Length: 316
Figure 1 (cartoon, one colour):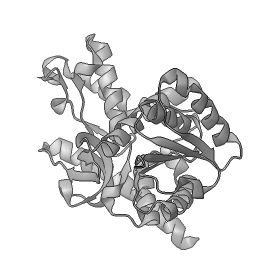
Figure 2: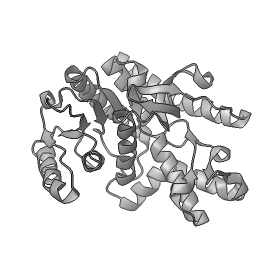
Figure 3: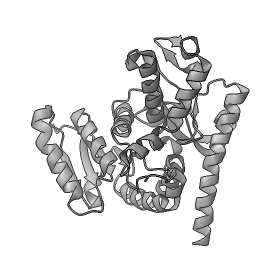
């Protein structure tokens, strides 16, 4: 009897895509198809990853291709294709160009994998989820943005470093859009179950909140010729693992809200139960007036990007 193998397609063989492919293959959870428009790039990186398999003790199949036919019957499609941020470039600057790229790659991918779940990584993240939903015509449960997992990881890392504790003991909670308007929630963040406000002064918490908001830009400024990819790739792995293993993990993900948190028709980061069906459930937590206002402001920023895309589309 043939073994049923799971398959993940990663669109975009740049730093984020190739590192995500590495993480997924080496975790042993799926075969990986790495696809890119540049001839030879995905093939070369896939071959390199495949040659590392004996040393990493896994038997996942890894292929590189420029042909979407090779992506057929993927369980998960991870979209990393797009322009990377450069120093001085905001996520909003990427909007129109990356929307065109995401629309094209998603349309091609879902033609061959109509039952897949899409994980969007391309920036500006929340707006690109809107584009992917439209291009795929999938229900919102099957088109998810990778933002909150990354932002929470950054917040957790900063908290752990500051307190001198293991990051494994730190839980962090981040809502809203992926960018300057994200909403880290310190009172829902804990260290071994201890609320963060009991361990850290308010002014220091606010400094770490601001550093989390600027986490991507800080790395861009240091690298000068690229953007983050190790932590984003690890975030992708956590989401893909939750889906393929049906772990029903509670993770902050960007999803199209339809009345939750009083927000309708806008993608925002919220805690969800992530499993085999994608978003199995959206969890609504009680927010203070200030937190609710911050989340509404964040959603408003995303709505503005979507309206810009819509206007550009009508003019085009």
